[in-house]
Every structure is written in C-alpha cells, then in structure tokens.
Image (cartoon, rainbow, N blue to C red):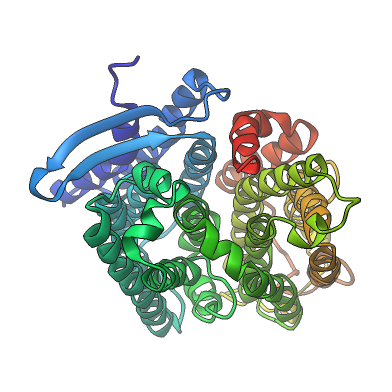
Length: 513
C-alpha cells in the first residue's frame, strides 16, 4: 500500500474521467452520467482507503508524495494528508456524487456538464492535498473555470451576471495572494507550506521579509482567502452565485468550495503569519461575528429559498473563522486574569479548533442537502422557489418533508444530529477565550432557528396551497441522493468520535502552539 500513489489517484481520478468524456464526444447521455458518477465515487473509495491506513496519532503529513518538478525554481510536486485534509477529502467524496445524482435529469449538454463537474471536483481535491504553493495555486485557480461555466450555462435567469461576479471577485482576491507568495518566494526561495511554516515558527520568515513587508504579504494572503470563504464584507458575490447555479453546482459550491477558503486560513494564514494574525485577531473577530449575525439576519429577510440557504451558509462558515480568530487571539484578555489558568485556555482552544473542523464537515452535509431540497421544490413548481409559493407540502409528500426537516434541524444544531457537535464545541471554546464574542454570536443562533423554522412552517405545514397541491413525494433517484446524507447526520450526531478521532491529536498540537 505504501507504494500506491494514493493522493495522486485521489486528485487525478476525476480528471481522468473528465478526459475520457472529452475524448468520447458521441457518448450517450446515460453513459456520460454513469461514467461521471462512477469516477466521482472514486474519491470516496480512495478516501476510505486512506482513512483505513491513516494514523491519527501521527500529526505529521501522511501518504506524502514529493517529486522534483521545476528544478530551476525549486518547485516540487508535493502532496500530503493530515486529519483536516482527510475530513475534507471524505466530505468531497460524499457531496460530489450526491450533486451528480441531483443533476441526473439535466437534459442539455449532459456530457459537458459532467466533464466540467469532474474538473471542479479534481481541482478541489488538489487544493486539499497540495503542499507546494505552485501547484496548490494552479488547483485553486482551475476550480474557477468549471464553476464559472456550470453557473453560467446551466443556471437561472440571472446566471450570467452571477457567474461573472463570482469570477471577478475571486480572481481579484487571488491576484493579491499570488503577489504575496511571489514576495515570499523572492525572500525565502521556497514555496513549500511545511518549510514556510517551520520558518515562520522560528522567526526566519519575518526576518527575511522585514517588519513592513510581512504585514503587506499577510494582507495579500488574507484577501485571497477571505473572498473565497467568503468572510464579511467580501461576501456579496455569494448569494447570487449560489441562488442562480443549478442544484448540483449549488450543492458543491456550498458543501466544498466554501471550505477551500476556510481550509486556506488553517493551512496558510495561521501557520505562516501567527504574529500578524494575533495582532489582527481583534478586528477579524468582529468581521467573523458580522458574518455570523448579519448572515443569519439577511437569511431571515429572504423570500427566495436558495438565497435564504446561501445567506445561511455565510452564517455557518463564519463560525469556523470565529473559532480560529478567537484561538489566534490567544485568549489574551483572560490570560491577564489571575483566575484563568493555562490549562483552561488550552482546553478552550482545543474545543474551538475541533468545533471548527467538525463544522466544516457537518455544514457541508446539511447545506448541500438543503440546496437539494430547494431544488426539488422548484422542480415540482415550474421553477418557483419563494416561501409564499407553497403550503402544506407535508400532506402530499410526508417522506420528503421528514428528510428535509432533518436536514433543517441539523443546520439549526439540534442535539442528536451532526450540526450540534461542531457548533457546541465552537461556542464552548470561544466562550472560554473571548466571552463577549460567544454572547454576540448567540444572536446568529437565534436568527438561524427563526428563519429555518419559518421556512418549515410556511412550506410544509398549514393548508395545502400553491405548489403544495398534488406535490409528488420523493422518487427512487431523489431518495438515493438525499438519504445517505441524512443517515450520516444521525450517525455523526450520535457518534461524533468517528470524525473527532481523526483530528484530536492534530488539534492538540495546534492548541499547544
């Protein structure tokens, strides 16, 4: 097994499927769908193989693949996996096939749609596994191309504008990040994430860049990642892109692509710029709180179901950054209090970091399921997806109502479902580090419960009205798309250690920094 290039197989298997689709232009739509789904499922297969051989007690990168690539520039083909990467690989292996199943009935340009989707899946996996900035950035930018065309060609009436806005925002952020890493390479001659993190921990990176340049470089990397998440106030591209994208693309955008930005904060910004992130943590904490609270209140004001879920995604992803910024601040306010012990601060950091990683995974499951449910509602009612367009759906489609309700309660954070665990640990950790931030973030919790329960009441309960009349319940394909994620929501809610066990040693190492 050690000789198997497992990580390369993870990254390039979807691209191999895309290549086959490109070389077979006469392939029938049904064969294109089957080939794409089988290739997409390879991520889950290889991810489970990696999980079976993964040693969670070893915090160093595992399954490492290093090869010289561009010797003149000191660039290496460098892949590695740790607990955080493994969670996101497994999440991709779950969400991507579900998104393809959700797109199974698309009739227009089926081969092209599946080809672009597999390109997007491979690029996302490359971001989660690459450890050299050169090809990490290639994967990062390549993800924009298929996502742009998936939104523009198969999206709703406002799709062209939403697609261009999505690309312009993210390209602008990437330009800042590329310039920042060019400065890092000029000062250090290295683009290896582990080497740069080691240099940052020893102060060599700051010395090489100088006191002013390292602040500028920090801002450049921050902007590239903040737009991708997106962190408030860089979020304005997201609601339109998520709402106008076809259902399968919306599922992947919220389930996987938003996690690429959060992953970058943990993999790049925090290890390479710990002092700068600590200095800026006070301001950044308020930006994360704005995403948590204002994202939830913006969702509460929406009448379009997909825009409501899109703003809800901003709220939920902001919890992850709230936890990181609280940890980066180091609990400095409490550290000055003689009653605050080092052990208590370390425990709070561990809780916050564990919660953030679990929240990334759990939100990917619940949010993608909710976008699929919104897609089902729209498909049954001529594309209409307003809150006022439905009533009494539970009467006509009790199975759909029950499964959608479980995804909704997972998003709310109901105990016993997977969404509770991450949010609880985040609040436990943030309260131990920055109590006022946890108190303010509670407003986001209340608003989230309000707008999701309002959605549940208006669409599924009350008299049968509008699109709720003669609403067909889930068929076999729709059930196969939705049910596995719902089962996992129960399983991970009752046994969160299945995921926590993969990251606990890594989190302990992070918290001790």
